[in-house]
Length: 140
Image (cartoon, rainbow, N blue to C red):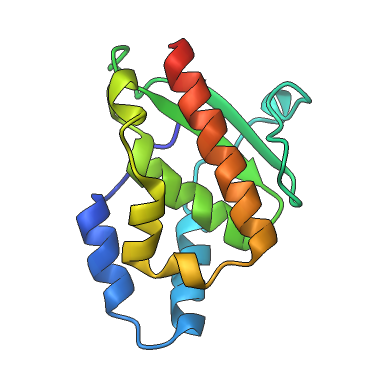
């Protein structure tokens, strides 16, 4: 499961340290590289996120020792998408399932400046990942 190593406020501070978008993309890719590996057994048609051009798999769960909170494991075959998954982990993992519906991902991505720097196809995939997370949380 993705367990964030930082808060969203810390993430936003880190993004603000970079002057150009190449550095921010490198940081985003680095965040994705730090994600825990997704077991091959979890890479199934049932866990695949539809609407993404890249391959993305997502599995719901709970943070270790916290069954009342939501977390997820995920992976992608695209480096930037893995970084976006890491950002979503910071936004959603460790929250109570009922609090997940209130998370404003559009505002969060605007604050990071990512809203203007991800392609329309990646944006569609991001929307699909958020819908999958919110669906998992509703079912929890």
